[in-house]
Amino acid sequence: MARKKRRVEPVAAPQAPSSDPKQPVRYQDTFQRTVGEKIEDFGKLFEGHGRNILYGLGALVVLGIIIWLIMTWSGRSSAEAQTALGRAIRTSEAVVTDQPVPAGSTERTFKTHHERSEAAIAEFQNVADTYGGSVAEKARYFIAVNRLTLDRAAGTQELSALAGPRGEVATLAKFALAQVKQNDGALDEAETLYRELSETSDPVVAKGTIKYELANVLEKQGKREEAVNVLFDLVREASEAKDPEGKPIPLTSIAQQAKDKLQNLDPERAKQLPEVPIESPLGGNPFGF
Image (cartoon, rainbow, N blue to C red; front, side, top):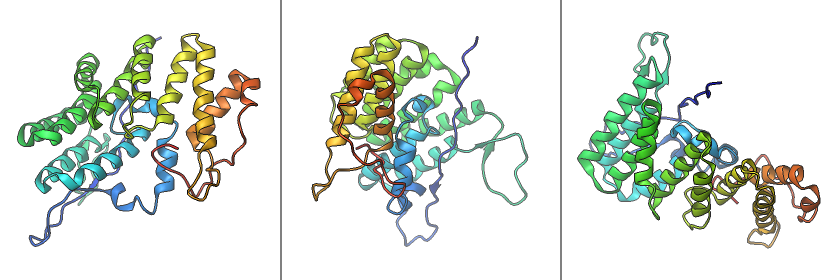
């Protein structure tokens, strides 16, 4: 049976730059503007959906990654480059529909994901060619994840080229590449990539997400005991986390999922875990525990 392809879902569009010439033109993602008041929502969106990064921009886990990228990068990039990258991101997450655009709407739409990816790649390529440096590196990452829709092999190769030993984009590319390998059944390669990611200190992808995906791969490989160990360590670390006042921190959703999975794989081992409160609907951290 043919494998069902995942589609790219849209993420929130970046805020358009001000038309006031006295105001500096700065790219600001919608989520960046609301991160303070809606951080609990990001926590739920980010955790437990690592595999969906396969096609990049629209996946739930990418919401947290995009926020992190913008917040850490916007302060050290030119306003012009920020605006250009923002326009390309806006294209990459435009609505795909065969319905006509409502009268008076300026929203850009595409009839197919293929057309949208082609348009996005062209814009990201222009950004990379025009600005260079870290801006170009991020643009090349977005090119690669969009390329997966058009040419899976080529997109995978581009991700491989970006997946270096360190750096924000390298981490993103390596995680996306691990997802591709996992989805394609290349489990040994996926395991290697996840293990490498789990040993880094780069916070762009939550360690809990990485370990949970590693456990999934190990289980598929028939390495049940190793999967149990990874899950146990993930949940134990989360269970032992304390807030500044020394109080236990509720389990994040990814840690709770890992705990549930551990209980299914090895109920006796799960009983060795300390009890901690489950994360409140009003709280949470979008970048792990």
